[in-house]
Structures are given as C-alpha cells and as structure tokens.
Length: 123
Image (cartoon, rainbow, N blue to C red):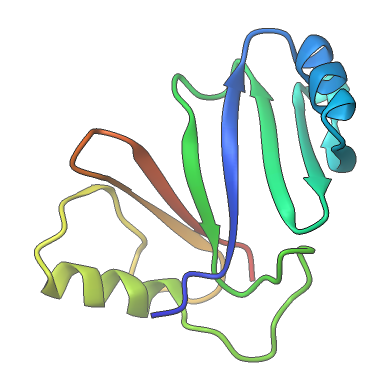
C-alpha cells in the first residue's frame, strides 16, 4: 500500500510565531498563505504544515498521488483502494471517501492512541 507524500499538520496558536520558529530551525515556506492562516514548510524532504484555527489537534497527513514536493505522480494507489484495503483489516473510520467517485477525496482514521491520520488525495 502506497500512502504517498507524508507531512505533519500542526495546529498552531500563532502562525507568525510558529513560522519564525521553524524558519530558525531551517525550514522555509513552500506553499500556503499566511493571511489565510496556513503554510506548508520544508527542510529538505521533511514537510510540515502550520494551521492556525483549522484543526483542534496535530495530524499525520498522507497525500496519495503526490511526491514530497507536491508534484503529481503518474502512477499511485487511489485513496478509495487504500480505504477498501483498510476496511478489510477492520480499521474504523472517522470520515470516509465516497467510493463511487474518482479524483480528489479524503478519509480520517485514528491510531490506537487517538492520533488523527488524514489521507488526503488532491489528484
């Protein structure tokens, strides 16, 4: 099962303070809009998202169909196929992708400790 690009989505209190902190740690803005309270930052192949007021908790994020640089892949495992495989392994879903559709979709599961895992396909 190929889950795609990985990042950590952080629920931050002050996006300006967090941006400065991660820049001092060697990250630079890759994508996003600080005026909309979200940024994607990179340090080599490591990606973090900063989100103010959008999520309650930090989230582990996977993006099927994308490289670590948010470039579309020619071949990848569709999110609906990933979801079907996980359902066959008795995973519980907080939200599900509509299996009658194609293209962009997402689902959410939680690990045994309650950590949120978002699988979010953009292509």
